Image (tube, rainbow, N blue to C red; front, side, top):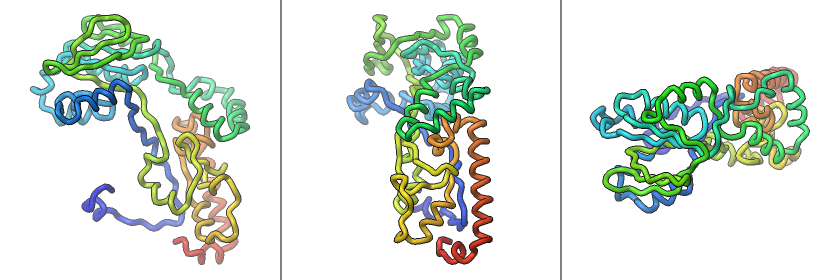
Length: 318
């Protein structure tokens, strides 16, 4: 919560166990030209700054702006090389208020049905996971990056993009923005392909996002009380996906017993568990894999509680 009013509306729930399956908390990445452009304009050209939108800002903009305002938007520049950029370009091309759409990306289009290679979905998955688990945490983080790669677009969307004429929707590959200027109420964009500077009414950015444990505000206090090591934005967990002691060391005897128990009763799923689950942690097969681990750990914890009730019931953690 970021305000006193929202804090007043918070409800506290006590629980003996918690599973953090909150999904990714992506934050959009800014291109160098965007950073310099925003700094150059400052707050003096609010109209210009409000019309450079990242993917997560576009739908709210469409919903909150009147149709008459959108009627002034004739040309849209979409930037990005993944499925989101393709969907946004098609959305704008199909709209009644947009006349021309240009989609640019810095690489060639990569057709792929899933956001990771098909090998991670097929019979090779077991061997790939064994190789993944044999690596150190830094190497695992690098493998996660390599396996997911950059932006990809399903073949059917690529085919749909091709159905539009160049006057309605133009696709430019291996192109980047060189500079942007705001003049006469529109953006004047120069690309690095040697083409002429073109005017656009809006720039939509689907240039990727970064997930990091720091983005999970709900876990900030927990990390102060129960620190955890982090590699490339991913927390280092135990094999059963519980909250691991710092530096992967054994919990010391002088640590309060409630902290020892708390670590065994906090589980993570999805993106937060990627260093244990592998590159498909965000996909359905990864969710199933993680669910099995967590369910087995919770069952084991219940059995342990029944067998050693005094240690767990009197620890003071709940």
